[in-house]
Amino acid sequence: MKVSCVVLAAGLGKRMKSGLPKVLHKVCGVPMLRTVVDTVKGLDPHKIVVVVGGQRDLIRNTLNDDRVIYVSQGEAKGTAHALKCAMPELRDFRGVVVVVNGDTPLLGAGTIRRLVGLHKKNRNAVSVLSFEAANPDNYGRIVRDASGRVSAIVEHRDTVPGQIKIKEVNSGVYAINHEALRILNTIRMNASKGEYYLTDIVSETLKRGLKTAAYCMGSEEEFMGVNTREELLRASVIMKKRTVSGWMSKGVTFLDGDSVCVDPRVFIGRDTTIYPNVCLEGRTKIGERSMIYPNVRILNSRIGNGAVIKDSTVIEDSEVKDGASVGPFAHIRPGSVIGENVRIGNFVEVKKSTIGQGTKASHLSYIGDAAVGRDVNIGAGTITCNYDGTGKHKTEIGDGVFVGSDTQLIAPVRVGRGAFIGAGSTITEDVPPLSLAVSRTKQTNIRDWAKKRQVEMKRERPRAKGTDKK
Ligand code: UD1
Ligand code: CA
Image (cartoon, rainbow, N blue to C red; front, side, top):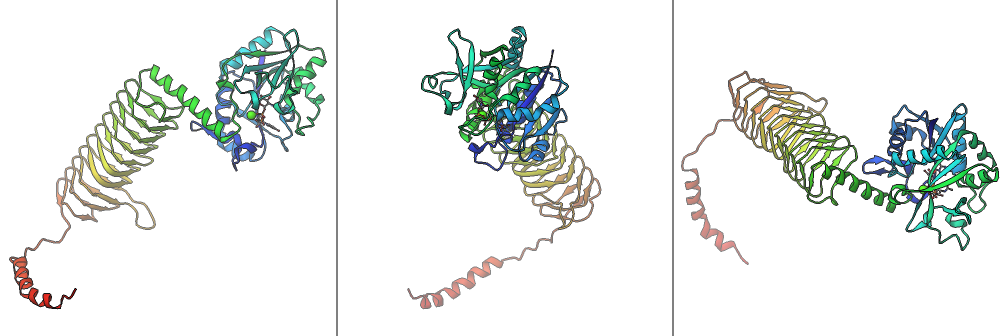
């Protein structure tokens, strides 16, 4: 029997106090809805329908996923109403419809699969996944009859005194046979909140003599719904812990697993060491035996094997190859490739440039829109002047070039292989290979200039004293 999935994501998310739809808030760098959609993909569903409210385009653009069908729920009239909005998309579908909330990013595909398995095995019309909550206040209570069978789900605000103590709660994950979707039409508006509750499908199904069950399984953490910023942080901490533990079990050392941010899509090779306060974001891949020192942020970048990223360095959308060393306090901006065994030192900024193997730029430089060859020495304070106020221009530096300190390269410009540039030069024209370019005024030494000055000052001093009244 096939499965289709509906993700409910049209709630107003008022408790977030945000201009952004709740389901786009990020847990470990990934929008919650993205995570939930990826999870349900693990079920290999026939269709994935996401019910969205306002800002539909923003949600669609953020997800950018053509496996997803979006339906709009004009007004957020409750979870049952939201699911009803998805029904036209499931009109011809025969099988089990899995419903999940868009705000439960820690939910695993394996758990949903178990629910679907039990649902089919027991030939239920509707099955609900439940769990035991230490504090059940934000969840719907699972009410069971004397024989232990579920009879209703009651939201916290609707509980009667006996029910408030119930710890077993609704996870918001359901398996519903396509025939049972019709029952949604009979759910009446909940008077206390003015919404149509999907939770009422349980009692409505039972009324029709159809089989319904609630299966209590999994850990509370997994089903945590994110409704507030506080819960957003809590979910991030849990997900991060899972990620860090996963990498430790694969041979990565963390000096302080609590202070780091590691997105779930990051890859880290064995025997790499991650110091405190490191943020590894997006689709970052770190090789083996690399060192990532404190306060480093790496976004969507590849770091090779045996690389060293020193303290307080930022690397964005770039590649750092094997054995390279970057930082401290370096900024590698998008589109850069730092070659093997390159050394990028303190206060060096590299943008959209390739740096060839073995090259060194150890101090205080800006290298932008440049192609730098192998074994080049970039002296302290070298700057590529790539911007003329209108356009950006390229600087090309051949293999083995020596660029003296405090050089400005006015792009577009080429320095041929093996050339030397004298310190303090402003290079405005191409430098042929194996030549020396110097562009600074010749030094003049004026003999005894300082000596004469000292004599003059001595002569003037007595006069100065007389006028100096305190
Ligand atoms: C819901 C359940 C509760 C369960 C909890 C699990 C109901 C009435 N309550 O409560 O039993 O314990 O989830 O986390 O179902 N949504 C829409 N349209 C709407 C309203 C909500 O699409 O009109 C979406 C939201 O975006 C969210 C999900 O449905 O992803 C759940 O809505 P939310 O308001 O968070 O429900 P809870 O109060 O958490
Ligand atoms: Ca919720």
